[in-house]
Image (tube, rainbow over all chains, first blue to last red; front, side):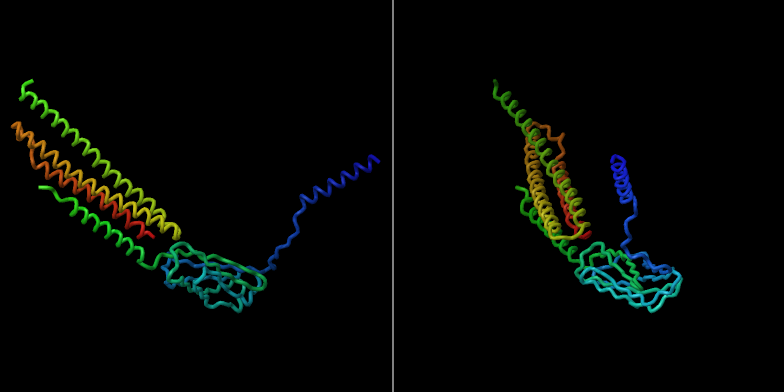
Length: 172
Length: 142
């Protein structure tokens, strides 16, 4: 009876240890052997643009796998109002070690606030999905705030002159 | 106490009073200038920090509130400095008259009065220009 209890505890312990140490079941999609799709944004020295201004950057789509990739579809996810055109937006076939350069034309809306923005460029083929991020700094395109500042500066100067004329008179 | 000695003591008292008023006047004017310049510079820092961040309605309201503060402080400082200058002129004119009555006016150069006027105008220009920078720079950064 006692031996049976001990065996029971040992079995339970073994199952517990295995449950903790065993690797979890792989649920994520494993890449198919021989397939390797790489995306590389080619930046020039300036990754900033003004609101409303059009900008072109280049994307290198490379196949470093051992099998040919076919029907690579390119798409983007960008902030609201942005225009992102990818030319071409599909690559029929890319042989191993082949690289194809794609042109991406971007245009933020005229009223885009100044600041950093990220545009996701997505490539999909044969169950592979690759995403790369395009970082852009948008500069304010309008001189609106400069004019506001100039107006307030003019107000300050006018006030100073008025006060100087009004209160600065010396009594004779 | 003879009348001449009594007058002499009174003149001494008036002289001390004028000197004391001049000292107070100097202190007050220094406070006006320093307060205005320091507040302008602090506001320049705060508004520049806000302007370099992400634009939002709250940020804009805060910036404009600080700009309103700058404008008010600068106007108050200017009025204070003008009043200070006029007061100093009156005190120094009285002092000069007193020296003249005592026959010692030769020791005090009347051109000092115009020097003080120039100095006060320069103080006002300093306040004005730091104020202008504090207003303009953050909006240019934005």
